[in-house]
Image (cartoon, rainbow, N blue to C red; front, side):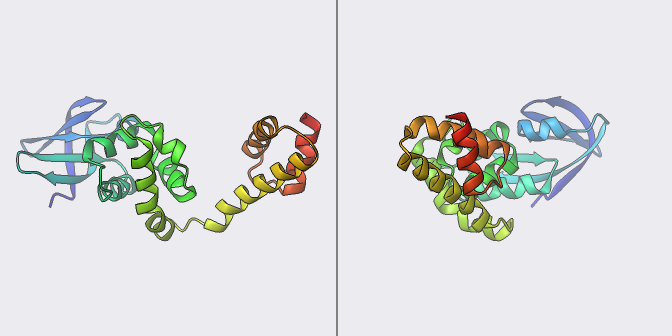
Length: 193
């Protein structure tokens, strides 16, 4: 219904702003991500999402259109309301949320306040396909790095190294070089074990 607001920034705090549009002040709820992107000028434009409930009409604002799309996607998941969706976008950057959903990273999503393991799993289950379609993430590359990690880990186990220790070292290697081949991971891990 209201796609965007453009006007003078009257009030600004980490959770909401008030925008004056030709004499009408709109109270707009924002995430910390949007707050960090707000320009230092008085004149701003926010993409908005209007949530209509029985007892309230609540306006949510976003500097980036992509953040609004992720917000709407999160709302489509059962058990995720506007408050939790905003908390997610305040806790993680939109790109991190997309990456976590695409790679099935339950732990990252579960770390967000108010989200338990079942809700995190539901978010991934409901949105993974949508995310992969919309954002052209190459699922092959995501599973590729996991496959390389798993292969390197099992090779080190066969060589007699303790799994927990090997896992920590491999994680570190993959963080430094996400494109590392299985051989490279094993060679680097052997130097550190």
